[in-house]
Image (cartoon, rainbow over all chains, first blue to last red; front, top):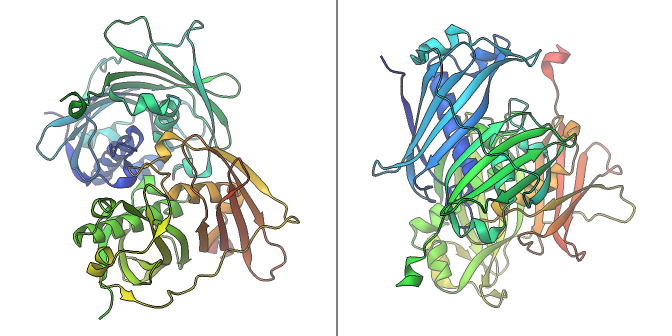
Length: 258
Length: 258
């Protein structure tokens, strides 16, 4: 028996889109997380039930494959399942489909449970995952690591101070904020002329209110026929908070070519 | 005959709330603007129809009176009407009610129509406001000006760089961003211990992508029995982008007093 799939619809508003009226990756992450929260709530193993055990779910990696990012006004369907898990890691998938049933985005993600006091990873309790009908496995699927920045890379760099409104109801920086910091390091002229086709993001260390983080990005020039950017967010002590790798395709303006 | 009222419901998600699970003023502004866009769209005088005339609506002031800000998971009803207008100014009201019908927020706002090319204010065309059954008046209601910062005020100051994702589909900074910049200038210890009861915000000059803005705030100490903060956002050339005045009440922790 496979994992239970949960789906919900959402109409994309103007404030969830960018200058091109396209949903932002950060808002898309918010929407998929909402679907997984609504699923676990409906199964009686939501954030509150999990917190009562003194633990919480923490995401360590997302790999998003994007056919196209939906636009303002579109009604999308967000689906999710807790595909499989082992002692320490849970593998959850998400899909975004448009109103015609075409797949827009597929997301693979890896999660751990962390003790609230010790901040240490703990064995995933059976009772919080059993209701999802998640398959117990020896090894969860392995996601590739984002390519690392090197000393030779020419960096685009911007700094961000963690703001009051970056902190969510769990008292942590909302994960979607990292997507804004990562991508904003790229110039607007690049962002408006390319479609994001995939993003692989790994969370290493958590940043806190009032921390100053540095978002570094570079365009890879040694890969023929593909447009890849590498990203890193570092903390003031030099520790890496997040690493990411993004793939892009140029936006072909058909009307201009006609 | 009064102005047409338009209402729509919205369930508040975790990503529209702050560390106290309360909707953020910025997100509330997004929700009310969505309601007015949905109303004007339904009347055939939406942003696109207005843009076809070479103009656009620009808000110059919001005055929000807040009974309480709704929480995550609540389903609210957002209502709006284009109450009245004269040659140059339109007065629009918004209400937010909770699921029991209690008023949470009332917003008064003043709008002008601006020519896209000249950036000059133009006479409001009858045909874009007539479908709203807005009342034509000599004088629209006057909103008080926010109290100004003075040289003697001790300022809390933070700087912000306008980011790619601050720009919305109109090519302008989403107005809600100013609320984040204004309020984030206050310390977290203040924000988590006080409820916002009103905000009066006036937009003077528009900021652009990559501008650095300075958000200045001060706590008024010469008003007995009330907690008032004054705010100003300035641009690099010293021009004022926004001025605001906020009223607050301390959060009484009943469980701690019991």
